[in-house]
Image (tube, rainbow, N blue to C red):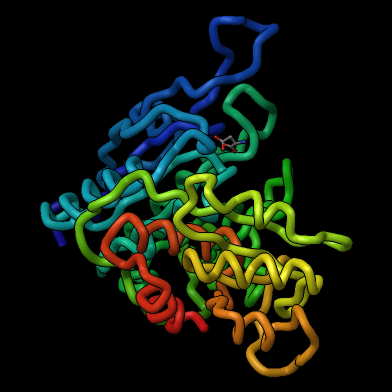
Length: 335
Ligand code: ASP
């Protein structure tokens, strides 16, 4: 511990609602990302009593405009902070894509140092803005021992969620972040950080980015589908496909034919559209069932949902893991 007895926490601001106020359109226009990291930190009373906080503005974007180049850059910057003796990092960003970005950081970083992602559902101009409380809670978690060595976590609404499980489940409520598979792993009460379930480290994706134009399609299957959307994707510039099948991994018979053809040309990963639970491996035997699709060359996403499967696949394709066999090997850890 340093002389001040305070941990050093870096806040990396990426934009999002937590940083949004009215833009050039004035009262008539909507809110846009505006506030720098320093302003976010300054808006939290008592933060300096919790940690030595250093803010930097890494990006100023709505989170749907973040991309994999941003996240690879962010992971590298966080790695440098770790090397420089920082005790914890808080990333502030838009909530819309947190379930993907936090998972990406979790896959790219192999650190003991806590990395905590947070944001806000209500912007700073709204009554009951939640940004300052979320940031305070996130800094408490980042400066505690509680989540060290557990990878990336999301802190929101005084709850702690593992990046691998968390999902945005509501368009506007403050308790939008949930982990349907297994629930929160901890919470913050007063100044205490409580972790009640530890998650093991999962494999990270290593190696330099050698290709940054890899495109992964994500298709959700619905009642009555015949596979046209899967066929239309071929020749459209995608390097891989994630299919969110119904239930435990099932599709209509015609879709199975289209997926088999796709799997001959690129890695095709089978996830479930239910949002929780594992893709089955050996229960059903009808055409279009999980056993049929796996026999036709699809790769099980295991317990990763479609968005996280797409994120993992994108990280692999950006590096040297591009064949179906390499992708299957990486997904085996989750399946
Ligand atoms: N509604 C979003 C947010 O919560 C906007 C974004 O994701 O940037 O920050």
